[in-house]
Length: 151
Image: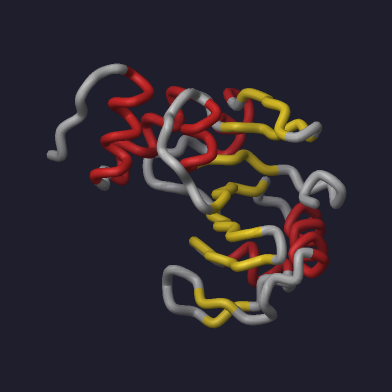
């Protein structure tokens, strides 16, 4: 649906870790969209077609409309249930480089006939290290063969 609407984004999180070889099961898709108004408009249209709720609370406890491009642009982390499954939209992430660098280093993989831009292995590891939850540290160990310890 995102491709059909021309949404430009990079997939991060568990789905990106899976694409690089992590075996952990993930139940949602995390994306960072290109931070430009036309892209947020396309994302809003895709979310409308995906039947995302008309109201959501972002990570800063603001009530936002995920079908409104202005609200999408100002949300820090927006967790949404859609007809196709759970989708988390982030405007940046701990450990992530500036968006242009994230996008430039991303790799493209084919998922069910659709090309998806996935954060590079180094960027996935940097984001997971910055968050540092036990499951993120396990993902890093899975991806690198090295044990990570919480600091």
